[in-house]
Length: 95
View 1 (cartoon, one colour):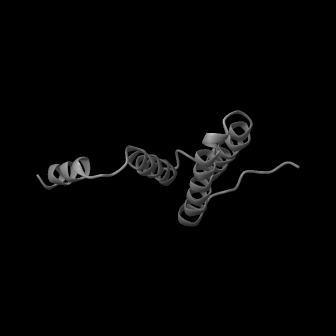
View 2 (spheres, rainbow, N blue to C red):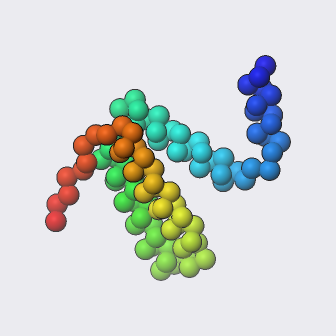
């Protein structure tokens, strides 16, 4: 019954739905990394894709550039966290 009460407390609170989604996605990425479904290289690739959206957004819709930059910052922090917590091999960079 306590879980139901906790859910109702979260549901009734003034938490932004975007913030809830961010918590769910971060938790999912960490869980998949912990279970070795995602590698550290996969997370780095995801981070690069998010960062690539910044350039595309700045050209097309400047009003959403701040959102893309915030998402890239979150992804970098999540990448750092997963790297420190779970370790793993980095992606091989070819320059």
